[in-house]
Image 1 (cartoon, rainbow, N blue to C red):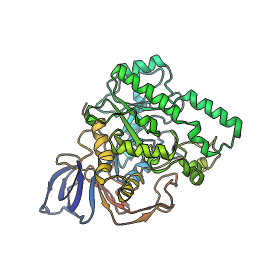
Image 2 (cartoon, one colour):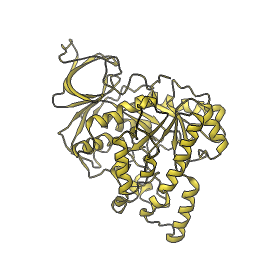
Image 3 (cartoon, helix red, strand yellow):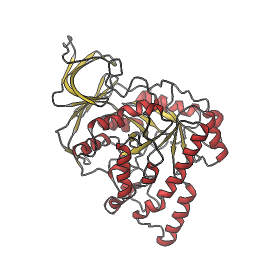
Length: 445
């Protein structure tokens, strides 16, 4: 591994931008200083004019392995992630088989240890009948518990109120939830089916998977967390009304109830269905301009704590089906950070705030050991960005196994040139180091 010196980068860290050299020794940031003498045999990267960010931490991805590898796998999607500046991911349990036993969960860790370009952790999946197994989860080695309170696959819908309260009461681990009320969605879908038949217009998606369905579920989850004292993290907020459920008057470290927003809910609204169709079909649905604006406001005033992707690829053939057959989800890890940096150029958010929401806060929220910051003694998960090198998303440069992106045709004003994972230069101007793999992250719990 040796050592690397990054010369003259503009570092973004903890709300500040400052020019420094960085010395990496083995997997750790050894020194940050105004001038570092280059050791013999060190790799030198001249970073004048470039930004140096902590590697982004994506707290919600679906990499489809095992069982759904015709769509994606850990190797292909983690490779796309590091090209997009994401050095750590937390993957969801709804694979085939589902990660609802400790043995199946460890199988996923074993696969990642051999194939993942990025650092990794996995969520344990809760069901109506696996509480005993859930309580075996090691809080120092596993990111958390994932519960589907709507829109589940297989048997992962946790809809038994007694079981739900037992889970919330019994574990001190972070519980992440997908919140949509299943009965409300079923009723709305039936109405649409009766009116339109199988070929329901895409514009009906946010009506079927309505703001009411989201709020009903998320507000119930929050009430239960308040009642039981559980540590609750609500994934992918999509509505204005839900943002009112969260607070910003205390530091993140003191919050017991936190929230995430995804890049697609910040980037698209219901007006885009006419052009994008099923390619922006997600659960929860992309909703109105008003909802989109409210999500931005809640992100900026710190009611929303984290930006993530919910990366969930499907094949092109699957997504091109009619509404009732096209699955929800889309690929985002390669383009999430570039998209947010474009919003910096547009004046919607500051560079410091992007780093806070995509790097610092996931590390704080999940209590990840020594990642998410550019600090001496921390793991050297680092990303260099050229803020003036433009590129356009097209079929030739998309790295997802599924081969498409909702951002196709979009021009980004910035380019990620280098990505370090544990001090290793994994990505260098389009060239990957295929020989070195990421590490299983650990937690200060």
